[in-house]
Image (cartoon, rainbow, N blue to C red):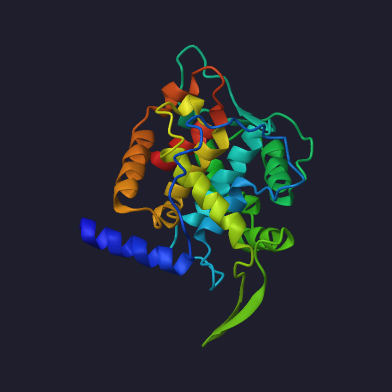
Length: 284
């Protein structure tokens, strides 16, 4: 695709999303690390799954692109990352031979409820499964993309619809019925554009004004969001409003993140191994 075609595509996405964007250069360059359990009641807080879906939803139409076949597995990856960041699951030890992230099994760590139905449902499956499975396998099982009929019971059903209902409950979207010739479909148009604009700006700033050139210094949720948004084919929706120059810089830095050695990153102090394992699974 030529640079001109890319620019036109971004302008079209920006127009359909109604997004404004661009980094605020006056803001501090260093991101503030958020505490995963520190939920501010004054602000609508979204899970990684909800953020990915919100980036994928068309503002007025209220549904994701019919051509996007990546977001389903991306949402399942978000579920595993959320469980890892909340301390409910962990990877088995690497061992003396330092097995790769993709070869290590995901282990149940704590059954303490998360307060999120999807997370608790996935956690229950992981707890009850013997022997343990890898992150890659769990993404496939939770998505229902497995040839093993015995594993189909692990599929999380209606994930997009359930997440959309969460966004409705949080006042971000509303629910409507639309007729598509042969069928009716429930849609969830945006009603609070401020929350989506804040999400888009957060993604933009992370690779522009707040770029650190060191993933270990980035907020883990933001880092996860960038990787999974890319894997889910919705990152373009966040970058579409950018100027051509800022877009080029943003994409260059995303490519730098994609080119990292995830096994090496996972061994650094303070790294979350489950997060890096999911990232590795999507990047293989």
